[in-house]
Length: 440
Ligand SMILES: Cc1cc2nc3c(=O)[nH]c(=O)nc-3n(C[C@H](O)[C@H](O)[C@H](O)COP(=O)(O)OP(=O)(O)OC[C@H]3O[C@@H](n4cnc5c(N)ncnc54)[C@H](O)[C@@H]3O)c2cc1C
Image (cartoon, rainbow, N blue to C red; front, side, top):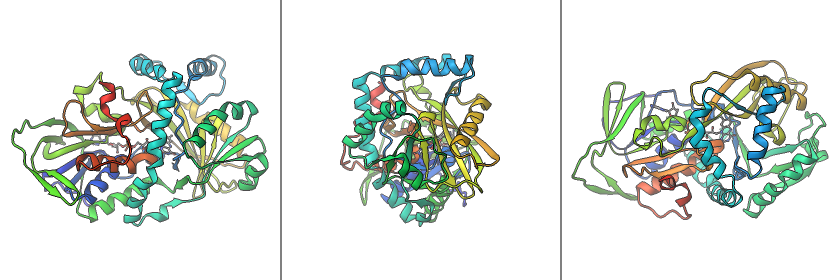
């Protein structure tokens, strides 16, 4: 990877080279802007690298639901007091800091709010493939995706019956899915233990084969096309208070030729016309003026990699009641999921790692040794919608974070929206539900 910091002035500077940041960089570059992207980690080490690897354009049902406020306390307390298995957990030393987030989360569990969230998620998810595939094709990375759909399974009648309204809600919004019997489940995935009652097959969904590698490939393409990648830890972003401003047309719109924004990193400074903050769950560290006004927090999630030389899956399989995916990756199967409220600093919770292993082996008894474990930070807003648009404090700083459980899926379309907003191009669907203004 070429690393350069010679040129210190760009049309656009992007902080964060996760799936969202690199997608913004590529779409802005396609629109004719000079773009630099800064990240303190290596390309490919971001949150997407440890994800469940699903292109989940069906995932329009948020965690927010009218029943959750009644179910969650018994799940959490049951696991604490009685040692019951649960994919939900809390770090009690952090939870007091999440009270404002939790209050807004609960308010977004009201039935009318949930319908609005489903609608808004369904719209952006329906555009996700249009936003992503051109980037993958330009980078010559189609070998890093596999189109065999995704399965979502239910092991109890109760679980399946409870999910029926969600299945209908997806269908009503155009998600392509097929409800399948237990027999069809085992025809599709013969290694699975016969404990499932029903399944849903999302035929248009697909799998990323190692999303970290995909981001590396996208970054290499960005650099090969003249983009600048800087390895660095950004400490501050602020306005330069520049009064004059000239604008020039690019092939797709206007482009600022000023130095509106100053970015400090590793003792150095660079200037840009606009900055895009795509720093995932860490974004607020860079936006102190929004602290207390922009309710970004994290839903921590885990994965373990298990040896799969004796167990086979051909596509990602989600186990609905248990809150995780089992995704085949070469000679291993990744068990990824769980939600833990506990901020960015706390250690791993062994109970959740053990839960993933023990439960996955009920479905696939021939899974082997645990070979590695991972903790990642989903950037989550309490209304389960991403934040995409100019900062309420500075129109030259564009916010692009908060993609919760679907940032790998939505990175591409987010980049396209950001590029259109900066180029003042018309966007063919309503993006107001994702506007940062909704929290002001
Ligand atoms: C267990 C788990 C499973 C998941 N499964 C899926 C799935 O199957 N499908 C799906 O669509 N989504 C999935 N997700 C969600 C998805 O991974 C995230 O939504 C997405 O990766 C977020 O991308 P991002 O670019 O916004 O943030 P990140 O990937 O977190 O990237 C932010 C980048 O900013 C950099 N950064 C932060 N602060 C600074 C700074 N000050 N200076 C320099 N750099 C900085 C970081 O180093 C990082 O590289 C999953 C998440 C988890 C945890």
